[in-house]
Length: 295
Image 1 (cartoon, rainbow, N blue to C red):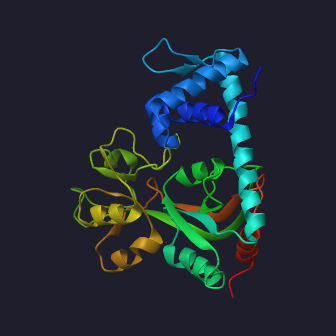
Image 2 (image 1 turned 120 degrees about the vertical axis):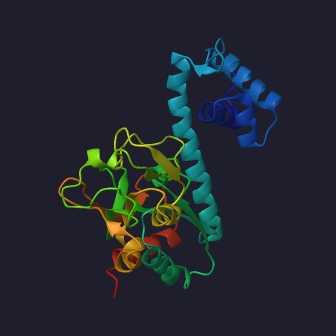
């Protein structure tokens, strides 16, 4: 039996991730026949059927699901090996990929990066912004070196540095509610009113319910700035980070709805990275700087 090729394994992983031969071909910048032939020859070489082609969409067989898990791990390790080799050849990483979560206070977060990259001119900063579970998905999939985001649950594969606490507050524009705003406001009182929520940028969205009132009408936006503007304009209410609305609260453009039943929250934010990958010298220097308390 001839050995599977890297292209065959990449085609298999892309097909599972993107759901169709055409989408996998687009992702890999290959032709549809190339991907189809790679999967067919892979099955022949392995002597097992990986895909169930009888339905509307291709699906994994039991053998295919077991093999896919190992393929994903192998490709991730191969990418890390290739990345480490490039780092060794270059001395320093040509690029650091950093994801900033949607609730991070940007002046503080970008200030930390500015202080570091101002002295690391040989490395390019590739900065991405993701929402809800998007930063964790990027980190888990190996699409970034470091994230700034809140941590929903402990993970032994993740090491993290606590940086700052973000407070969320339920707010609306004055006059948005027909009734009187009081400390006794309940989720039931909120149900008739439009609630603004943030879209999860992850390809595999979290099932967590972030302050969503069951049964309420909702509108979704891509980022906190758009959410703030929509709420200021009186189109909806929602939870926003206090660092984004302090001036609005002071100027009475927004009012707090927090009370005994309708609560805000405090989310600890971290710098986080994976333990199971090799980090280059520039990434290590950035990590060391983040460990130091701000002067």
